Length: 81
Image (tube, rainbow, N blue to C red; front, side, top):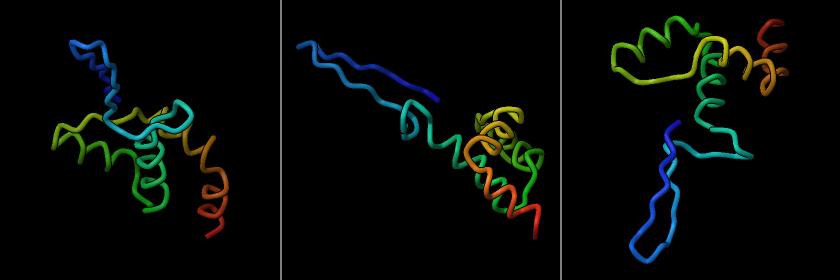
């Protein structure tokens, strides 16, 4: 995630972030991990796609950790179907 703090000549400060943040966690990362899980795609196929268009994304390990920590019920449902 990219975060930039802007300061004008009057010392007003504003922060711009490349994705929404909730409780200091980037939501785009969670959405990516969820999209991989809910669509049935693999990390490898998404990684190939993002590589072709040169889009930076989270690592395989981070994706798995987000799926385990934030989407545990979805994983159980996925295994039972």
